[in-house]
Length: 551
Image 1 (cartoon, helix red, strand yellow):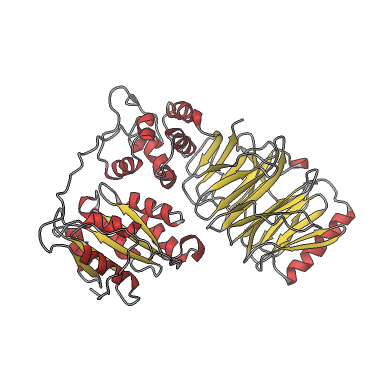
Image 2: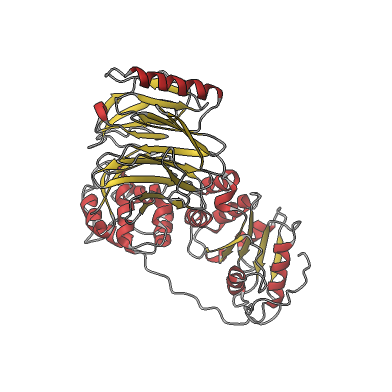
């Protein structure tokens, strides 16, 4: 273990008596850039291992120092599966992960702002539900440059021995004599009935995840959904609840009221689930701020799932009530807003991936491809010549200076670029605003009584701007995560702005005032949109959801 000089001032927060040498060693390990990325804290029961990690999580810099330190994230492993741990770590570090492998990939490739550098403090490996799988996850995380890990376990833990074997690790051993306290073993918590939606929504979500992963609870008990099961997703043994839980797990494992958890679970439920689940979950979600209008998931048949979502558009004019859903192959499907039923496909010939859709009021659809070039798909109505000239001028500009985001209203085309500027091409000329630090990831334009442009960036900010005026100085929203999608529309409730961030959060804002609403579907969000009726669309790789805010 690297040597370290004890800190003379710990701001009044001392480690548990008997663990001071271990605390000094851990602080030395944290400040040694050449130390192994993985540190194991070992010792017999009662030696103070868990208390030491709890102290380290709360320990700050010396009084008066303002230097920022890497985030320290404490995640208990007792009773945990590898999947539940991955969801907990991802949530704390501001990324989205459906599996442990997704977590490693997300931390290795995500932009630095949402996560920065972090120290993961993992306690009680010896009491985990899947210690071997967790040891493999720890080994993979230790290879990620921005993450350091402290793992605590008793000396006789086989998974701890596996971490020691063949890996460069630091070790803090607290077995220097009698322990500072006697360990208190928590009684085993009873497992909820995993086929009962009310029990699942009210239970400890990490316990539910472990039970679904390990199959440690039987499906169906008297008094719940234990009757004859329909075909389809009910093959998971819990009426489709397990499938829905695995789809939305990272969101479900967050601290939240049972009503909000019921809404997320309802939104993740496939059409093959036990038909009794949907009305039950809807009743349980009565206290949530959203009402689910419909949801379509991979594998759904009635109506069929429209495919992975990469871009969304809500059309007006001749296409009023029609949704445009683009996938990674460049196909754009038309869906009915009322029920997501198919209304055909957009007839276009855009090669490669589509990064933005901008339906114009006359039925024309403007498309931005992955090279930043503009394409036009004309509608059935004839376009005025001045709009044709405007579109041609924008197309010529983007051929020289590629765009990163696109929107359109009656007489304007709005484009974002990689340098953080937003450009509004209109009939009266060009207006520009340097709105963001870094790439503009999404723009939207609203043709209201006071038309405005809304933009989101890799810097995590959402800003409002009326072309011809200075941008609003204060951002509409600002978070430590990049904006991945944004859309705005004039609705019967006033203008609404939907924003999706890289950490999986979706928010609905009211620029004219009013509370914002948030929703996390679980998987990474690829696109959002607001319909003319005020509904919120959320698209992921395997789902398309439509939510309506409750009055």
